[in-house]
Length: 319
Image (cartoon, rainbow, N blue to C red; front, side):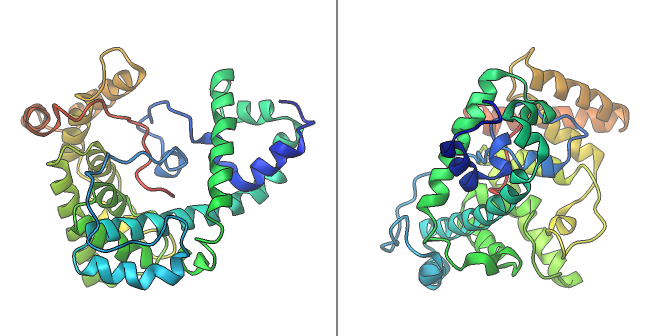
């Protein structure tokens, strides 16, 4: 597509934003890739079991703010479907707002205005097929943004008030494994927590993620691997990830070794993880290495043998 893009493509981009351009990038994240880059990919949480709602839920396009109190009440009564609906709707409205904002930057990007090919090349997306997939993804996102305009009307306050965390934790408590993975990596902004609140949040999120791991959730293994991999110093102005991060190379090795079981030999993901596992193994004691590999073997056999392959590049939150 050249710089003379039609009005149709201009409309599509108004709806989609910069993040949609990258959602189909499916390469495996190398060890040095930060979470912000991974979060631009398509949100693909672990499949959720079908849970019958205990109450009649609003229609799919219902105004979120008008129905939020009812969904919250149903969720607090133990309605797992209502809890997941509230969390997912809030997460989408936050992402929707961010995508529209990012579009303003895209529209003023001189590389994009030169040509979409040049822009894709700058983002190392040179495969013509993947470029077409990116444009198709823009169409899907643009349509969803248009369809949910009323649903998300007035939801801007959720961008920073931290209410997404209450909804996310409630959904995770009721068994939503996608919510538990997202709660652990915690990218959303919110008020800074006190030390006591931070300890409680970290303990709760780790507990839910470990329970989801025992359900065969690859997303939660990935989240646990991420939070064991590096140390952040503070939180509040950004997300709550600093409260959940517990750097531990032996634990990170466990999770990477487990994820490696979900990858076919010889694939790019497998090669990346083989290199990472070798590097981690060199930084722990032989006893720790052996224990991590034993744990990964046994955990895979017990909980993940029927989970299918892992998508190593999955985004853990719709952010």
